[in-house]
Image 1: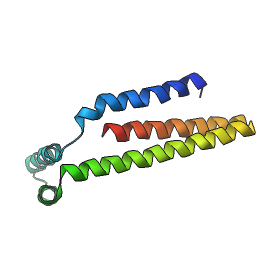
Image 2: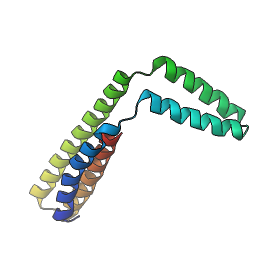
Image 3: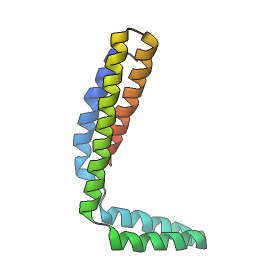
Length: 123
């Protein structure tokens, strides 16, 4: 991976997170997704799926809170940020060793970790 591509990934990930911050899923969003799936299952006369989705809907209504969703999101982001930091350290170590194969592998792993961080921030 070229250095310019890596720099671009580093610059894009935070910008994407800022534009996505206002569209975080809510309990109402989760309920709507379950209801849509439930309607499709009912239309397909899939009773096993209807039972499972009905149970999921009841549990979601009983247990979902916006605070819990925000906490879960913060936890996913923190874990992803830690992974990115670890991958950056691995890349720095590979660069110190001068082994191009290691550098290429570490750049790929860092790019994947940055992608996952961007996805965690979008959710």
